[in-house]
Length: 114
Image (cartoon, rainbow, N blue to C red; front, side, top):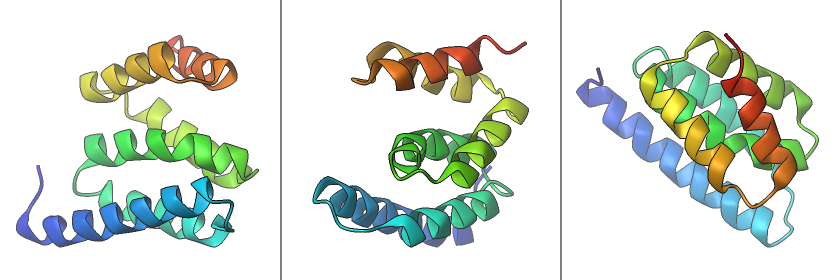
């Protein structure tokens, strides 16, 4: 459950995500921002783990493309440890719809963990 203070944190996360997506799409360096966003998502997970894990899943392809293995590994651990219906639904959606076959396979692999 989110509390009022989490709304400002979520807004900050949304802004950071938008900047990373823009920078990544235009070829600008954003490795530091990806790490900082992951730190923020881990903190946010203390208040709303479902939302944080779904956002981490969105961050994973960017972190992977930037060879941010520490971020990718952390995301995988969070998602493996927090397998709520909402997170699993996000993984199923990504496994079915992501344009990159390797990334779809990665999500499918996480879905197959029991």
